[in-house]
Image (cartoon, rainbow, N blue to C red; front, side):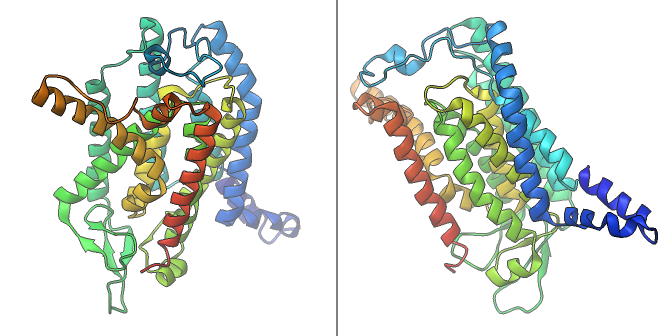
Length: 394
């Protein structure tokens, strides 16, 4: 909105005495300037709306009045404060600030609109799940099958839409001087490998499904300790701030031998808004948390990473940068798989971890909550550095 308004004012003032006075509006043509504006706007919105939203959620009694699964299982000797009574659905604050700031500062295109639509759908799904948990007062919420169906339908829509979208990316094949145009589904890029891989519709759609659904659920599983999910989200978001900017710059993309995607630069504005909203939410979510993001925020943020990674041809970079999210999701899958396998073989189910997701395993080992969070931040930073290093290791 600000971009279009600035360009309209510049066109209107052209050839008049106002032209020199309004020349500063040319700054809105730079993605870096609009990204900074988007981040600051999202941060200020969170600081402004945060206290009001927390009071409103408390008045509606939208709090976690039931014991979370970790507390109910027992054995958390190092946990000082209970999570009971803390309002949830704080993801509304993140999503609201992100959507408003992006719509104000980004130059709208198909990539931005598709990303915002996905965030809105997943936030709605998460809101329904959070509301169901509060009504049931048991932590059960929406059946996992229902959530997976909605996530897969959204991912399938995104995949087919991108398949039918005109070619938006340019890739340089090894030994070729001329770029090859491609859509955003049929070609994959592997980290540390400069040659694009043509995979076709079936494999391409499978990668899109796994990226969006897997990322959405992985962030959701990580959201179990004060500040853990949103802190790791900020670190991964910083990585994709770089990747989207480079993917949207033809010269930088050619130099680094990554796909150039027309319009991807505007996703940098979106990522900056995510960083601003995340920092603003962390202000209220750090230990001891005043509000939880709930599924409203975690499903939306995870899905946002998935679709942004798909839109710039870098879904496998998400696996590296989001290594903590991957570890959290794998710990749940391994725990359930091993328990079922041992129960089938021996009649008694056994566990690989004291509790899954894996952050609860370390809590049960006696780590304080703040220790788990800070150490996971360190691991996430190392994963982010590896993802950024992959830009040059080819």
